[in-house]
Image 1 (cartoon, rainbow, N blue to C red):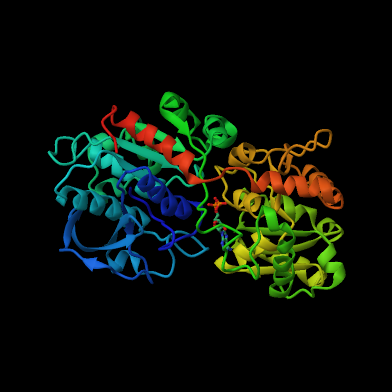
Image 2 (cartoon, protein in one colour; image 1 turned 135 degrees about the vertical axis):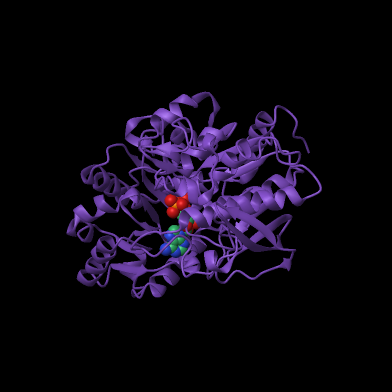
Length: 479
Ligand code: ADP
């Protein structure tokens, strides 16, 4: 695998969780996975191998690699400090680094140079998102006739179609891309170059992270201009729901929770609610403990529904609920939540930042998890919420649609609350419904237990990936 993020080495979002967990799940099924990842600032180097010389256009770049183990997975860190020893993975919030095309071309070329140096051939190469988009491109063009790398089957996963790795056409020469990589059936995208389009065009099988999202991205509403490209590959496009890492996300053993709980000890979840209120700077009064607590852990961007929440303004503050929000992102949304917290210091708390411990405590201590995304390829937090007995309120899109089953008052079935229309009214109506049902303790308990017993493990997903690898390899893979 080649990726730009992998938990616990480097993470900005769900991609890291997937690349952290899928190789382990594949190992359990008897497969061996090596992951190539940039060595960003703060990532400790492992055992150093001899340097690799990598060509970027007219320039030869010497890069080091080192190896570390992550459980059964071998992780190869591409160590080129001018490219990767920086404050951010992709750039500050004001914009991406200007040389991202070169940084991730370096990752792709270094990964292939490293693979070529190994004694054995790989069965399949799996690239994740645009940052690894050049891997299938390079394999199908400049490496097509190599003994070691030629005809390696490729699988490419789209974790989020909104990020397309689009760069000025002049990068073609600076990166030394093969003419065949540049056509309209390849990386060319409205006069520019897209690493994502290259990954899609040159991979044998394309996957994305939920069945619903696989269908959605073939429509203009969700396709971001790629719907034509994807419809053209519809037969090779497969949606596989992400699992969640049950070692990391398990309320029965979670070290970030004050007291473990599970479906058999659900009353002990109250200790997490109290701890969360305290951690958020809210008093854990009887009132506060009885009032439903709505948690949010998210990138604060429009994709996640923060534009809808912002239009609700003080309607949120008027709800009979406590809000604890953790996230960072667009300044306007950060300001909205800061202002709301200032207006309701006893019931709204916001922490701007990235804080893994607090994320776990929110999943453990909240009653409701709110995820009103405009689009959501898979989404992990709603699955963590299900596991932690925190009832999700979500919009019916992508992986949210595939994992959250709407509560049916007539039968009591379901594991959460779902709204269809991307409007503030639909959101607030559904949130109000959830807040009402919260007061019906036996219905609520049933919702919690339905979520906690849903299988969100990686095992089933990993088996589906194996089938995809076998398909890409024409049946050659096998443990
Ligand atoms: P996306 O990848 O689009 O950001 P996902 O729901 O798939 O959304 O995954 C987000 C992951 O990042 C989850 O593991 C979530 O807990 C984590 N996360 C997001 N924001 C924060 C934050 N501010 N602090 C801690 N963890 C966060």
